[in-house]
Image: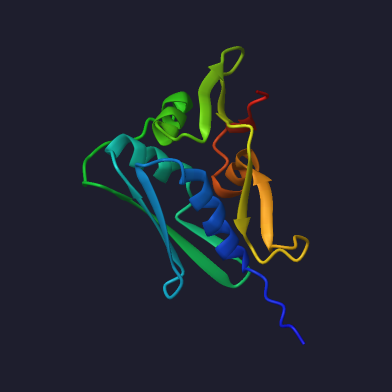
Length: 159
């Protein structure tokens, strides 16, 4: 008899965060199962501060708490300007090859968009609905699951 094993939701969270920055050479995402902590190592103060602003410091999954720690390459005094969401999004996703554009639409109030590649992302997630155990999703879906709701919209390019 086969034993069925399913990835814990906090492991899935880590995998989604990792996939969002897999194509960014300035970001390395590491999961420490023993401490239930994700460490996000980031090159550049502006990028690190922007990512830290977008991510929660902890995420609760029932009675399990996952801690998220953003670690800049060198400790500086850069502060995020949270009132300028275009700047936050631009800094967080600069040089990330999964991102096609970061833009805003001005109007009554500004709308900031991070536009991801039109690409299906697959990672192993013990998915019983897939013969290989993979989960197939879009960057946009993962970003909506991973980041804090700070009025930045995540979407997929139509090209």
